[in-house]
Length: 198
Image (cartoon, rainbow, N blue to C red; front, side):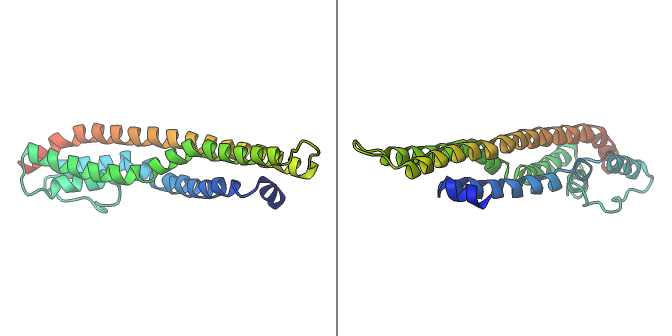
């Protein structure tokens, strides 16, 4: 592996850095976007029971998941009107969206830029190839080095870009589905909240 990196030249370090950052983002987003931690059907049922109880109280661990934090923000609203509850929920949902979208733009940028960084390596390799040629003689070692730089960087750029784009699209879709589930949950629970707090 180290021999390949040496043959690919300095441009490959751009893609190696991008791959390390991309992998860290992917692992982080997998941890954060676990569906059960975001919009859990079990937590929604707990909230339904709490809201239907004769004596209203916040459920146990009422800050543990995204859906808990959204509903807790509504319950702690100073005004107990429908508009105030909706505003509190929407405001908390916007804060949760910032958390779920975190680093996704960076991952998308890596997916877009990795082939370009690979292309930069290709250009550097082509320059080496042309530098190895002269009207009277050519240097086979420098020619081989230029070809290695060009091909390794192109390949590594694609190796970094393809998974980054796949996971970027996957996480974007996951975030969209999480917030769709949150909206459905809110439409079920908001009438119960209004009934208890009005």
